[in-house]
Image (tube, rainbow, N blue to C red; front, side, top):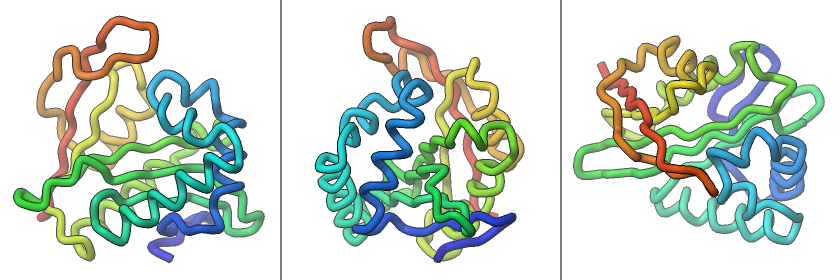
Length: 178
């Protein structure tokens, strides 16, 4: 276990998570379809979720990408996925991507999870700069960044193109190891 807080725990993704990830993705499909279409597609059934998990476990072991689950301790229900991606070990930088279950939205759960994982990332993984890239209208995600002292850096023009939409400008937030 990486961290525990307020009845939740954060763990590295593991082989036994496939069914729970599939359930999470299906239950939150409307929330994931715009910004996480690949995750949604790669977890649309249990077989695909097993492949997804196996790949993420290997990437974790190889320090290519770090995927974590956020679960309620009492029920073991998976309520969030957090990924540290776009790793650049030469400059010790990574980017957070995260999604929370609709039942936990707006309750500060992801804010606390990112706080815990930021500490873990700086102290254990050895990264020195973390990024969050978010659309300005995704106010809950902007709040996660600002509540964790990520500072706005700049607007990234045409940074992300949702399926069937025009490219979107995204906002870059960063936090540095102190």
